[in-house]
Image (cartoon, rainbow, N blue to C red; front, side, top):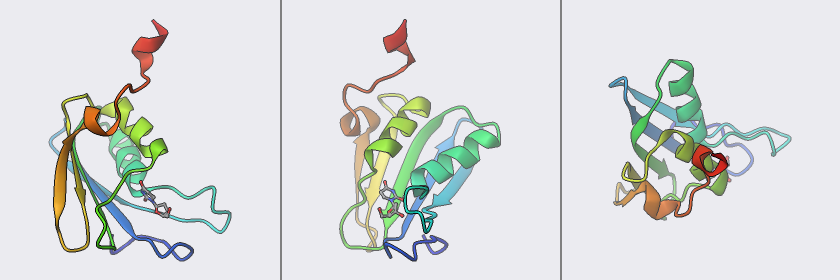
Length: 118
Ligand code: THU
């Protein structure tokens, strides 16, 4: 979160993920003057991991610079669903290190996946 690049929203986000390769990858939000090209912290972490060879995310924690617990956006939930299973763990945290634990299926019920195209 310290490295978040958020000069437009000033809303800083950090994510850390534990992957099947045993490694932890982190990510921050990276904003852009065009706004729409902003990359969220969760996707930054996942894209870093996949580009290093990881195939599965078993746990993710998301933290932001406010007192409100983090809530991953819809786009990030869909990207998470590509690499996480329904029982995998999602921790949503705030700037005082309070957090709540969820399963992935709790934060994205009825997820669309490749199985829907069989
Ligand atoms: N943001 C994230 O990094 N993750 C989310 O799931 C919610 C939104 C970022 C994107 C943008 O830089 C800022 O928060 C405000 O939307």
